[in-house]
Image (cartoon, rainbow, N blue to C red; front, side):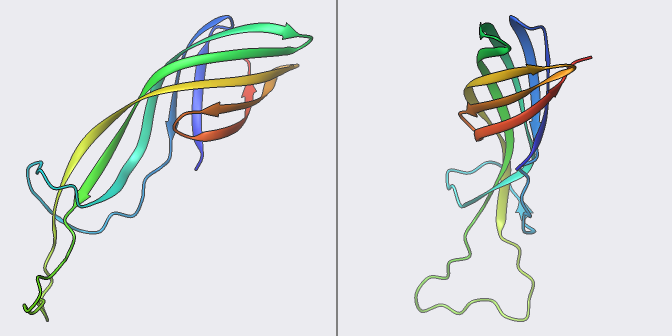
Length: 139
């Protein structure tokens, strides 16, 4: 998985990111949201907004901590289980029922950043993405 992010500021920063998490979603017949869960698929990218606070603690190395909220559109598709003793449809294209919802996730992150001329190298942990390695460019 890869993504693109941006931040403004150094000690206190507002940021955002887009992670390309979309999966190949099978065709389905859209119905209103249901009580059943079915199979879950990520539909398109995950969007996040966050607030970061950072401080320099060694020469050229800073520690940054942040909290945020991310949004991911997901599709719930009914499983194609056939009850015992019944025949499955044949020679017909039958689409399963499915519905789309936007899921919200509260996020946290921490990272170490090594300042370089014109940018930085980052190593950190994000609650939704796991370990993250990044290159930051400063304009």
